[in-house]
Image (cartoon, rainbow, N blue to C red; front, top):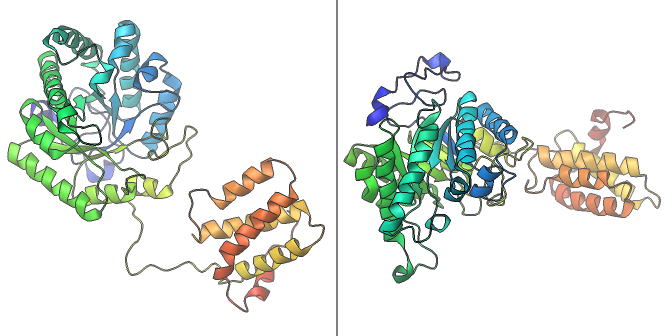
Length: 427
């Protein structure tokens, strides 16, 4: 399977977390892949600052990419799937080539291989992209991209086309160009193999039916999974692996995980790791287009959900029968702070600083004991309020909210213990 046969085994188990690249052997971002790609731990990537793929390359920012690849490296991720833009290439081929080359090298410096997606949808291509008259222009585009990065050590895979089997909803077969999209992706795959005799080619299919249909023109199969139950995820993985065995080619999931599709990151990752299936999440950054349902990192390196980070590192939430529930009032802290809160609320002239201490203690209790959802963390609410300057009415409302959330967790008779554990120092 082309370059797959040239990939070496891992050097040793103790060095698995810090592998060093040998570019002459494997162009894989500093990590050595097994022939079945089961060790892929990847992500789809779009810059936070851009307004789409064309804008990403038109206003390419090396510093931003370097920063984001640093986050990925810290998570031990090893492959980036990145969408190119025909329009950006057409507008300025020289700039475009320089930018995609810089991306590949920047990712590689962080031990991350790159998979470039040549086309997302036909709407971003030349007029009438399905016509034979468009083939020379498509050929020129593909040839130039290969010339720019085909020999880069960080290049791992080509993706000839993203989700060519996607159908505009509501599904209306007479009005879809699905068949044409699939033919176009397969044509691009043949062009990639014509111009690059080394780098494996895939097509990022939405469903396994497409992966089977396009199998003859690719080296690696890939599909996307946004299933809504563990059973569905596991079944898709097994079907994918069976297809790979049937056609004798490796397979990897190149898109998965969406908080808006009942498709949690940690569950997808756990199921894929359990099945020894390589994966790529959508997406690394909380970016403009999909940030409200996708992404791990904000631009400054803070995160949305620690459970995602833990799962990427191989640690999963306990959902079994042996969970030990947190008891926030074991030592009287919850009862004591509730008593303090009521006293502060009943004071006709409550102090701003004293109220902040009470509110922060309550917020920390709610978060530490996992007593509330973390979509809008209590400590965030408090810090936003604090940063706005003294506002006693707003602080009263926030403390009232925290009282309602904390009260059910108080244990009668625990209040006196609170005084022992609360430091008697000025805040």
